[in-house]
Picture 1 (tube, helix red, strand yellow):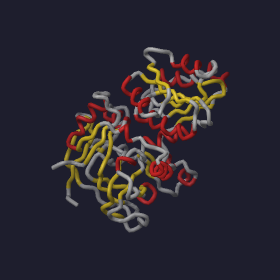
Picture 2: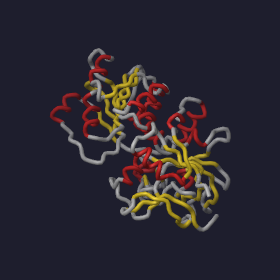
Picture 3: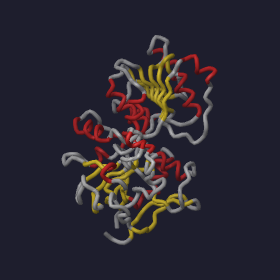
Length: 350
């Protein structure tokens, strides 16, 4: 490997920008070095660039990627040089209390650290800690694009659907029709609900969800009342489950108001500000409210679903350009331009 590489780094003065940085090296015997073949720009990367989530100066950003193993530590037993891998955005030591109990996103030695606490994947190479726990083989007959989103937003969507406790025949509302919301819809389908209602204010996102079959009903909340739509489909009760993927106070309020009494609200959104919890009103609805970010325990299951043809979210990959053009990607994806759903970063071109 060369001594330096191109990477997208962040600092407060300029925001994200492309720079020459040292190529990562193994730090522990459980590490691997992966050559990034595809990565993405994620909503949380936009939050970092906007200063919502503070990170260290000159940190390499990014956490959603696939690649090829180019080096492994002496204690990495499951992978070898040349393996194609999907890497989870959650780093998992496998030994702490939380890992042993399946709560890997709270790993005491990891959790979400790629592009947040350690250097991430919007680069030519990335160091993967605890490689045996965080990397998953890509089958030979599967394209990189097919599993690119498994390590973050597809796992997030599945996490939200699972925690929604969806029953067959339920009416499910997904508030927020961005990439995470559409992954949540695709995963909610696995539970055989009778209807999935997508709510957003961006028409092209709603149309994308409907055209690709991840929802049955679309509601632009600027033009019609989502609560009335949900009631009209449930004999006046309201939805059985709401999955909140937008992350502002108004969408939080909508998520608990739109479900029926004894319904479930599953919150996936990343909030940049606090929200009120009006228990004087909510209490009488006997709601179950669950919150949390992506977990890493379902990656192999999701890869299997993709191989079996049960999940396909490649339609989200609307834009594709090399690492050279990543600043354009932050603008187009971050500002919802040009119908962009997901910006895919391909390797740097000399």
